[in-house]
Image (tube, rainbow, N blue to C red; front, side, top):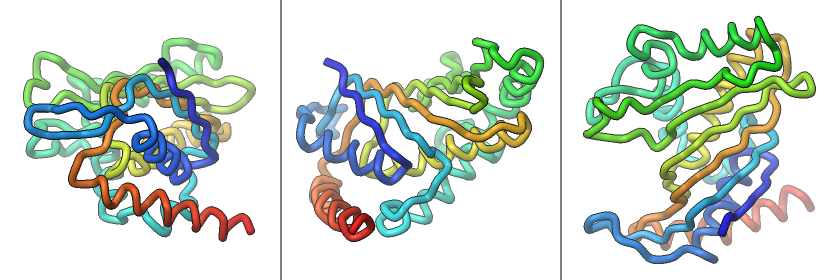
Length: 215
């Protein structure tokens, strides 16, 4: 089964993802870690670079800053041996993001402006959760698509979306076009046992925040 969600921005995508985990998630064990997991989730985010009321009220600023640094800095994360920024900007000496932008500048309808984050021979300590990000220009907007092998839907999902949105914003500025939709394909969307109470409380409180915002 494939689950398809649509959201206006990062916070609402986060809210819908957590709702789905608790409504449809199955219990699995990753080693000794117990989690609720939903397989094969596709989430479309219309404004991936926008900070909304859900993120402002419930997001962890430290997590957002950490994730931005992970995507924008070439300095490796100590426990990983790399960062997403390093893989974007200095992957075996290649600046993948700049090359993707050049492809789109040369051919705005290119189908090959894709950056890879995984390097299997070196990722035995930590396989990236995000395997690839694809960029395309369609209908005069920059659209993105990312493939996730795994995503912690409660703790950091919104931060990943905002970081990917920031990468799209950088590319869109170089291409002089607006940012469009970001579509995420997630194999394992999950939450860990230690976050169950917080996750359920987040659902209730974020739903109230949404009602207040739209009243």
